[in-house]
Length: 318
Image (cartoon, rainbow, N blue to C red; front, top):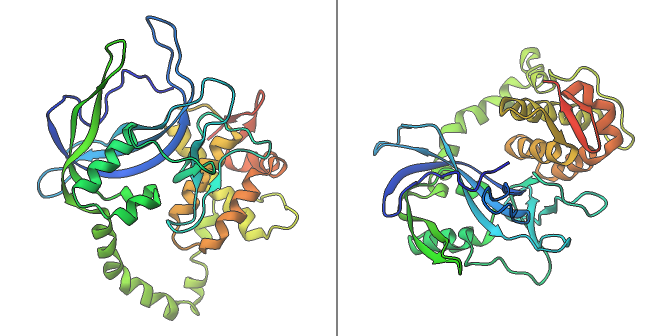
């Protein structure tokens, strides 16, 4: 659980720190209760940016640090938060909601964009809105920002800073996380990648008929023993789903998690699906539908290392 006292990439107001964004994820979660008052903030939606410190040449000088930017404060009643994590195949497609089939949203749900209820706009005075405004002021393309597709932030090199923000009625101060200068826009870094990858793309068609090349895709399904059959879904989607979930479980376990909900593991696995650029964009829905099916998930849990526990919790065995 996130502790409100935790510091982000920049710790002191008025100081700049040169860094590069290495990851960005939207998460629905809840802070720990205030140790002095016992009051606990309602669950909220936030963007978590992973930023590594770099030197002037772009070399990494420290491990990545997470910085949380509140996007939407949670309602005080039991209603569903209006801006929540969503998952999209790319920056131009409509996002899928992270609520389950019963309309419930689980703590820890993650996505690569926002799912916004009809008629609702993202609050630009919250931490995320202020950060985006600072990017726009420094020349970040407005059309890219409007997409709210978090992978578009990865690769950003900038001087990050804290500036004094608003004070609450009780005197609590909030400092705004902003960029004071942009060294490299992320889309500039992305534009340079295809040229480096071009030789590999040319080599694939020539190698395809060879027996050795034909067996190359096999490692993607290596962690899968024999996933249970699922009506209406081809074996390849089922096998790869187990492989993606295996990776998601391993990463969660590496972070120290011993249990996760069904929805948390699905969200993490979908991030792996989105990161695999070799998959057809239209396949995201197939993976999402399959992984969300609890019957399939329970049948194959032993293959990817998640055994049903109490309630919606799954025990991670990887």
